[in-house]
Length: 297
Image (cartoon, rainbow, N blue to C red; front, side, top):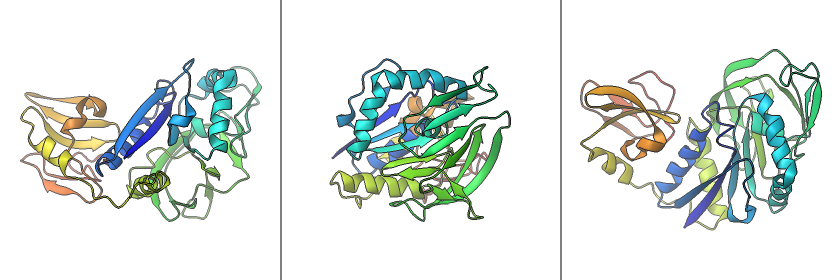
């Protein structure tokens, strides 16, 4: 049982920690005994679209999109369009969402320094117009797109572009407003941290498994908990997106989840256990001990 994930431009489009979405998905699948391979593909690197089950592209600075769109126009974009025709799955957030649309218009040069209109990949029926006003908002939404309809989301938006979408929305705000866009198996959204609540993560993991002929009902294993609990070198305490705060004797320090993933004992949205004082309660979803947002594993 194996699933393959391609992370596009992670060295450029990871300004808001969107790599955490990949780590989240990998953990959820691995806890079910499913092997997950994550490959990164950036500027100038070839892309073998036949290898992957899902493609992910995150968000970054708007001015970087011009460079990336040139790379896509050099040939990689055709490969991606072929993958979409073959019904491969694409999940795009923020800047990645904008680039999968029809056009990106900067009429005043607020992002690029000169007025211009960039052509996107045309995989979503959207048009984005940049302005000097930036949207910053903590939001809740409910996924409207099948097969994830009904999944509750809680994340944040931070972007200058205003995107008009003609297709089906990815989600709805509590007031009924539309968020994001979906066309076929291409999903675009502005929401960072969309896997934090766990419901969308589970729905996506199950859907990917079914597409690959893997039984999605496989029970999560307990190996992450036992591996971490046996460690005598580090006390794992809190996961927050791509970061883990650990107590490494004799001082506190930040470590990347990628470096320290073996010590992470967050096992899911319902897991809770008592850590030795003074760390207090830690649950799989909420990092209550430190007041941070959520655990993605």
